[in-house]
Image (cartoon, rainbow, N blue to C red; front, side):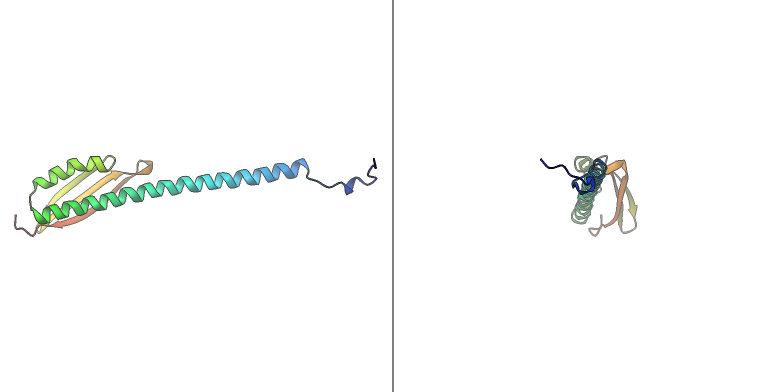
Length: 123
């Protein structure tokens, strides 16, 4: 068994190098997890926004076809099944209705969309 005469000729990793490498890897994994969480939250908000757009198109078509104000009441009741904490406000305009649909997305922020539904049936 030969002994090394020069201690600097011994190769390998020191404890400090291993701690630094572990810290860098842990920071990288934490960053990826945060990025994934943010991505999921935004994806959920976009999903809810697409549902809200579909619901607004739905009421516009109902008013265009039927022209019945009672359709708005039924539509308001249906919205809670599609969007979390959904509420809507309807205002009669001279050529139709102004409809605002609000809901709570990720982080309990309130999101709102507004549209004008034109009533062409003369009702």
